[in-house]
Image 1 (cartoon, rainbow, N blue to C red):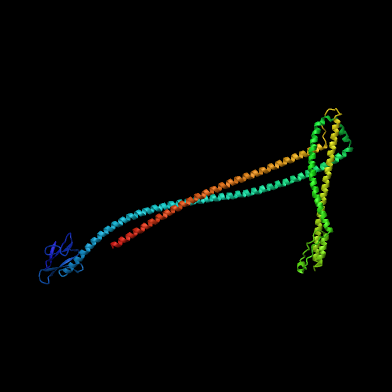
Image 2: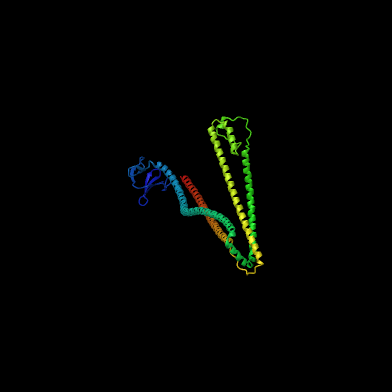
Length: 494
């Protein structure tokens, strides 16, 4: 190191070469002056000058551009700069320590941010998983909704089948009713035929008086009297039953006769009213043209054509439009006359029916009386005849009774078959309705269970989404707090 006298006031300018490459300002004791300030020595050169006071030699340091860096003249200025530089160095040292602290804080916050980022990534993964679960649950819910829709469609189809079955059942019932009506018609025809057969039997029995075949039959019956005791008793029982039935029919006929007598009385009363018209008192208030021009009829007398004609004669004097009034009254007269004719015809028909019934009953009574007489003769001849009993002859009455019994059995069988078919149809319909009701109830219960499952899944999804939103909100708040702390730290360091 070379030391050059910088100033006469015990300051030296030391120029160090080699490794240090610095210039030092030293005092007379050889120590660094002004806080041991060191100046860079690169590209400096020394200029030797004569000191202006003539004492020693003055050395001045110049930079490459020829500017004075250190000389005896600016030593005080350099000393002041040395103090400023010392203060700056202290501030820089403090700043470096603060920077180290800030770097530690930043490193710490970086680790926390990395952890938060890892948590966010984990939460993102969880969110993606939950989204996948939600999508899967939505697909499952859609599938279940489709299944429910299919079941609803099936229910609608079943309801349509039920309606068709009800229509078919109604049609079957209608057919059964028609069949029952036909059966009733057949029964009426059979009853009519039975009545005609009875009439025919009465005619035959009436004609048997002069028939030679009847004589032969009686001769055969005389030979078979002994074998007819039991049969006679049975016939007596049958005759008693027939008498009972005839008594019942006579009671019905008497009821019909009572009804007919009432009708005859009503007809007689109506006819008597025709001979004695009853006219209501004449109203003192005179009729107006407005009330009569509408074709209003006098309703006091409506029971007989004579009364109606009297009413017409009374009204024609009051109404101007005679043609319209006469037409209306004539229509009323025609209607009443036609109705009276219909009633007369009905009464005549009933009289004829009653006369026919009376005739049938009389014929039946005669036939029964005749059979009773024949049986009495047979019983009387039994004591005088010792012939062996033979088989009872078959009469026309027996044949007709057998035919009627066979027809009754056939009709009973048909009724039983129809009743069985009706019962079978009702059982089938009830079973179908029961099965459909069970299927509908089961489907509705399954649908209800599926809806509850879907609601539970939706609730779980909503809870998970709510929890994720809360976690995300908490993470956002923590990030805001971290950013706020970072800003406060940076602001404090500045």
